[in-house]
Length: 107
Length: 122
Image 1: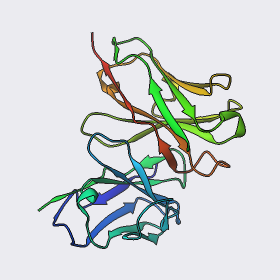
Image 2: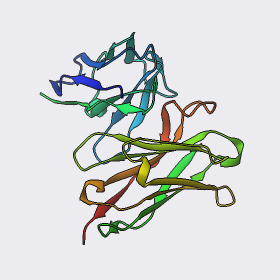
Image 3: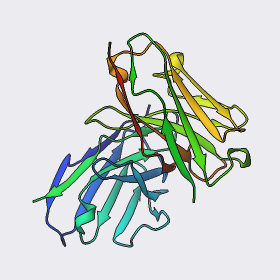
Image 4: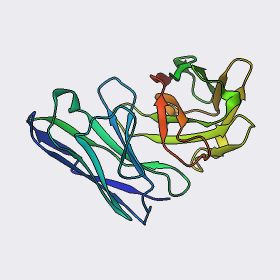
């Protein structure tokens, strides 16, 4: 099973600041990685797939990068609605696995 | 647009079977795509449970395989999850979702249902 590790666990920032979230895989997943956003009380929403492709309707301030074992989700300038938990997910091999999440909260 | 809605009992007794349905609107399951279940214990992360195709092909998380059954009812445009011999550790919000791009089960989940909380307690 591929284990995904996310860091930091919590990121405390202010609106307008840049957020950089990391996801590391226990073995190479090529570019088979996605990112999701989960706001309180809501279901996860797909942001990025194939490591760097924005899903439909996702603002350009969200950028995914990386390949192999190291991936980054960057939010260029935080909007109030971006304060949420972010999860990565790999599809490279069974079983499908998720990272433990990074919470972006208000400083 | 595609929408998914979970339904089922919110309370299940230990050792019994959890049963949930996911009703799809805006898309016919007969037309394809894989469909999946994911769960999230309160305050914790996400766990993939399993995915299935309308033909009946299924893929289950090995950690749950012995207790999970997924099925589909195309006449109701619905797919279902059964999890047997539940314990308190199975208490979670259960989400249904469509799987990725339609041609593979090993893909992303989009969109998701709103989720339903199932509590295992006597």
